[in-house]
Image 1 (cartoon, helix red, strand yellow):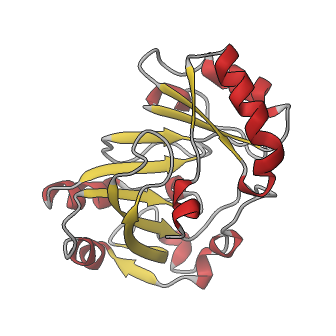
Image 2 (tube, one colour; image 1 turned 90 degrees about the vertical axis):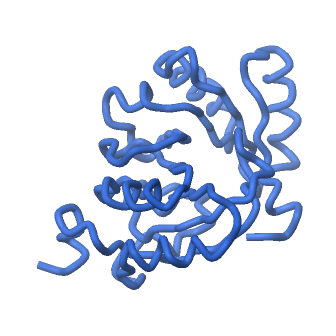
Image 3 (cartoon, helix red, strand yellow; image 1 turned 90 degrees about the horizontal axis):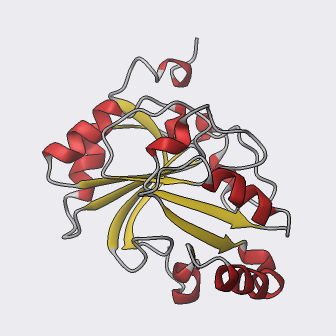
Amino acid sequence: MSEHSTLNTQQSKLPVMESFYTIQGEGKYSGVASYFIRLGGCDVGCVWCDVKESWDAANHPLTSIASMVSEASQYPGRVVVITGGEPLMYDLTELTKAFKAAGFRTHVETSGAYPMSGDWDWVCFSPKKFKAPVPGFAATAHELKVIVFHKSDFEFAALHQKEVGTHCELFLQPEWSKQNDILPKVIDFVKANPVWKISLQTHKYMDIP
């Protein structure tokens, strides 16, 4: 059995593709200084994924939770965003415990394709057609963010809207490569359905990670 395959029980190390201090570019916390940790490993398989190099966990070094917290603590921001890949492939209980002990707000960006683990201040739930969320996951979401790649994604968004709680904030985000075509459609949809908001990948406009 490989070291990666035992990560669900051995939680002191996780495969990290990259980590960096930046400005959150998407969703509710857009514009907020945040430390991102991108975990390797994903089997959701989005055709438009812009970080496909994250998919194979074996390509990324196992990094101790202690070193992740130490590195993040060098920066003044106190929001840590765990993303991927699909971060909930791993049990993140110990990771969030360590970051909270160090005074961080914990945010996760996930497709919901795996069960929830960890203690999160903010759950960004971004369901994908390529692998369905686990039943009931939507109820944990603080933010529903649907990537709009095709006009059928508006129906997909409406279906998931029915499953999240009334406290959940709703965002539609045009897929970057189809921005020129999709954004006008998103604008029209939000104008007609004002419970939704628009999320843009502002970090790409700012040319930052």
